[in-house]
Amino acid sequence: MENNEQIFIMNHPLIQHKLSFLRDKNTGTKEFRELVSEIATLMCYEATRDLPLMDVQTETPMCTATTKVIAGRKLAFVPILRAGLGMVDGMLQLVPSAKVGHIGLYRDHDTLQPVEYYNKLPSDIEERDVIVLDPMLATGGSAMDAITIVKRSRPRSIKFLCIIAAPEGLKALSEAHPDVHIYCAAVDEKLNEHGYILPGLGDAGDRIFGTM
Ligand SMILES: O=P(O)(O)OC[C@H]1O[C@H](OP(=O)(O)OP(=O)(O)O)[C@H](O)[C@@H]1O
Ligand SMILES: O=c1cc[nH]c(=O)[nH]1
Ligand SMILES: [Mg+2]
Image (cartoon, rainbow, N blue to C red; front, side, top):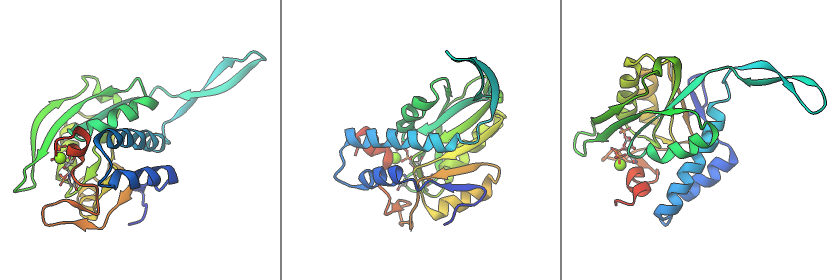
């Protein structure tokens, strides 16, 4: 799978290096959590590359200079519970003023269909650019539903940021929401018969929260 106008694969060496440790079955909960957060920070750096800038006048100790600041665009991060929560702190490292909404979804084990159990978004979301967060894009059902829910509140724009994507999920999500830019660190081989990504990293929520 190649980068195109909608899908951005972040193959930065630091991200790829950390991803190897994330995949390792011997990586424990504490380290796994730290790695998810660090990868989120690196991905946030890339995913905010298109934020518009504006000129301001700044007094340096030497003279007045024309410098740049972000042009008043406000961000909101929306993790899909639970696993998306693991990415929030890493994102806030770079954008501490962002608001955070939450969408609770779990995948039914038998049908693989997402089931909604929580939804709280910032009240001023109409003024914000939203980045929906989830480490895993498998069938794409959870991301598609979460984005549909966010769209009802009419944010300025929506991006989706995941760490590992399956080709099946990327296809489904990009077709369902062609206006949403998708960022991921890896596109894996396929899904297994239980909807888990191969080679993947197992169940991201369980590994972040130590519930396996
Ligand atoms: O693309 P999909 O096929 O929908 O699968 C991906 C979803 O599955 C995982 O969540 P899970 O249902 O395990 O919930 P959890 O985060 O609470 O563990 C993952 O964090 C995604 O939200
Ligand atoms: O491989 C997968 C698929 C869905 N959810 C996960 O946490 N891992
Ligand atoms: Mg899970």
